Length: 237
Length: 237
Image 1 (tube, one colour):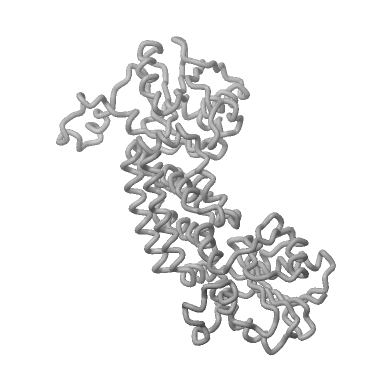
Image 2: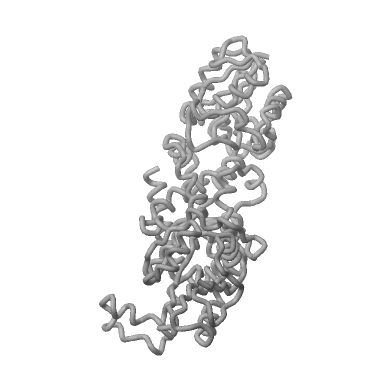
């Protein structure tokens, strides 16, 4: 099996290093003879790469992207979306997704680091992590996810994006806001708890900005749920 | 120097173990011949112990409490508070504090654990921590704070309570609220970031409840500052 990796950053680099260590035939970029391609570019470049691959790889090639949001990479272009009434069954929901001329699998490994780039990539990055898969998963891909030490979790793209807002994107917003809200005197007595609560604030700016803009609606909903839970904690406390 | 420790829980136990290892004459409880007494009971019992010690220790004994809020342990009983106009100078602010018939030093070591009790106490708990002191600090006490590996930071009681709301109590409320707001499906894909952001939710219930009730006003103010910062992060993001 020949594996290509487009985007040799934190995630792409970590997949590359693990697969190399496991003895796979893995190279940077995507060639016509690849059996599997991981698309690991920054989120705002993912669609362009997926489009470009349409003229590069074979119909039987598996192409899996790894970016942090899944609905936008699945959707058909707007002009092709079916009228609302036709979207009730599972089959018609699947029909909403853009068909690619290769075996496209939208995925999201729930692992990473606040520091981006190949220089921060490492073997073992995915050990013990969940790896969300938003369509059927070809067995070859599933085997690789497991060899990387992760567990495949199946979830619809829209459910993934809501869940990611709650457990990842909104927490990052809160971490950044905590650092803004606390003045230097308060920070001067902060202990380990505050350090834990603000660690995500160091998320790389391009990544953070993509998440905040591209998942804005779900983050807003998650914040409202959080504010309501805060009221509960304070009145039950 | 003879040192007594009232309240042999997480903090009291950790002070005890360190001082014992350092060769100090340290015992549980407070006796008439103690030169220094640490009051390490749960917050809601601190005032009762400080009152009780008035009939136990000598006038020259240093009594330092370690609880998480400082304004309430410093204040004179309400009936003795001076009229507002008399409170402008440093001297008259000091006069607001209740005078104890011993050398009372309100302090707060910014260290701990979510699990309470002597069984979780340990040597080295205060290594690298800030230890807030809300009055003048007798050199004997300062030496001990430093021997425990901490750094004394001087702060007025009211400033401490506002800062603690921002960097400790409000973050704990948010951690608890995050766990409430996220459903099980969302939690099933949570990674290290969410674990970091919710660690403080495990804070022992009695401790958490004391903080939430006894510092409610400052927590509410800190939350409003956070909400405003969240809006800034989202619009600047």
